[in-house]
Image 1 (tube, protein in one colour):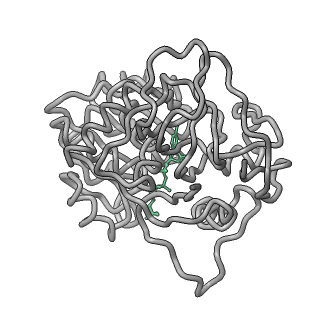
Image 2 (cartoon, helix red, strand yellow; image 1 turned 120 degrees about the vertical axis):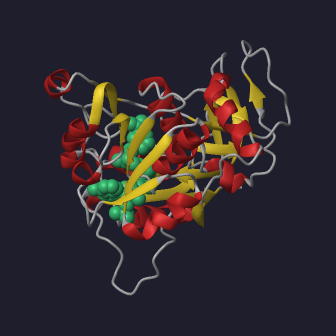
Image 3 (cartoon, protein in one colour; image 1 turned 180 degrees about the horizontal axis):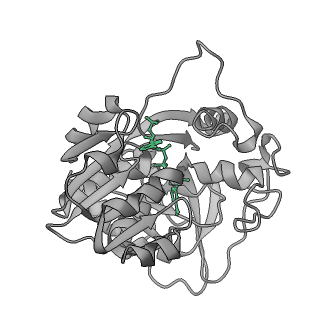
Length: 325
Ligand SMILES: NC(=O)c1ccc[n+]([C@@H]2O[C@H](COP(=O)([O-])OP(=O)(O)OC[C@H]3O[C@@H](n4cnc5c(N)ncnc54)[C@H](OP(=O)(O)O)[C@@H]3O)[C@@H](O)[C@H]2O)c1
């Protein structure tokens, strides 16, 4: 099969033929239509986090994908799966920048029929991270108030939509020019992080903070949480001393892909309650260019420099997707 691989930490991506994966008894082999690009791909490839996020080299990146005709081959222990279904999924180890992938059926959900394959591939990581951040770790309930840092990003946009749908009051920090976009997807209030300090302008405390930014933003978040509130970070550990001092809980979360959660998200997408956002679609063999786009936002990862001045800028919101088949 064709695949994009990383041969060494910090190396270039290469596109060539590799062996199609063999499946274990509890796996199915899927034929990928599209996969999406995540920060995580670049972080793992850079080797900077190899102690906590190791990869086996050579490594095929890609943690989310959509497939048509789900089942190419089924392991002997896989009982229920409908051949021919279109599906989408996230997986923890990577491997989706390729034509085929071996996956556990428990991670897969039916693809919403109203989404293109490119749109479907953009959903699993960001939406499930948002869902688990809000509900599994943040225990967000109807009537509560949540502050989402980085609300206009890929994860943040799902967090805003899901929190709003759950009946919470949603406050998001973002660049000022994202205000209209965030209001259009359900934010009640947007605080421009470049102009204002959220802890100075918020009059009332919040029940949950979902941190997609880290650093000082996370530190200052303790000041706006109600006692008993929850600080959930998807980016860096939360100080337990500070959390105890402020009588709140603090947790760093890591996405645990779940076909069940993704199925529930799929139904919200299908009924139009929430929507996906694709920024750019590249062919699989152009993954390196897609990484350059992402590197604009992660200047120190993978030794990449931002695009040249004057180069066309990608659409501000949404995921970068690779078309595989
Ligand atoms: N733990 C997990 O399992 C998990 C899973 C998925 C993602 N993540 C992590 O979650 C983070 C967000 O991911 P993403 O895909 O949503 O990223 P993204 O699409 O790049 O979005 C990041 C957003 O944050 C905004 N931002 C930057 N600095 C800010 C600040 N000080 N205050 C408020 N907003 C700020 C950016 O706005 P501007 O561009 O306008 O500055 C951008 O809209 C990443 O660090 C990613 O690695 C973790």
